[in-house]
Image (cartoon, rainbow, N blue to C red; front, side, top):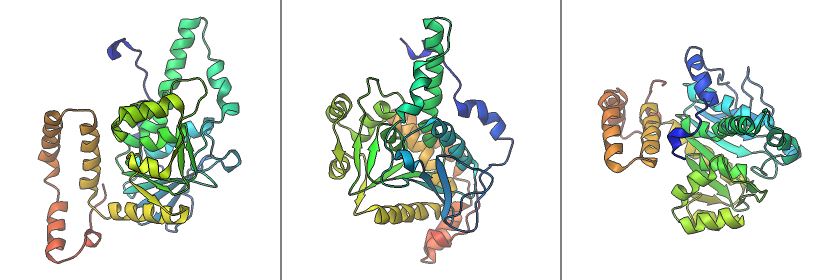
Length: 313
């Protein structure tokens, strides 16, 4: 079926976007590291300020080994819509609490969500199910739509929805004990993995193998296949290096960093001539920023970008 003929449902961000632009972001940075952000309580996420302008979003549901439940799908969208609007946040790290990053979907808690779809006949049930799937896709698409770079720091198991999540992140690191696997529960992965992995990993053969056989990939293999860019000895070192990378990013001009993310995503699914035209149109306004003059000045003074008083964006 041509994509234009498929039912188009508004995503949560589409529905909330117009309102969100009219109100200040709900996330307010706190002064002390390791302190949850006030005014926003999550059941499955803990949001902390770890460094200047760097947020750490930790996946929480340790009694279920970070299994994805109903609250998670909603809270990820709420959280990263707010992160995207928070001018004090320049970069974000996502990690998992406890023994693993994410153990997949909580089948007991979510089974009825798909097995008991409302509708008077099959057509209406199918329509409602499609709407629901589109809303769940937004849980991970929101990471791409967030203008701030997102770094995934993976340790232990990263299964099913965990692979969907990290494939939507901008940078992926893992610990030596990390392993990655699709799940075999009788369905087609529908929230991002099949769309992202062929472009991330490059080898259609390897992606097909992973998707068809649910092959378990260990850290060295995922690094060699480009799913992650760096592997560290343990979780402690992993988080340290992920936060260092986020801090390095946060010290740069937000105009440059966020514009770079936008244009990289444009090049993801557009040919080179169109991407070049897009960045030319982008920079005809963005090159007028004072950040360029500030950056040149500190370079001439043999200083680093962390010494530049960049304005918020």
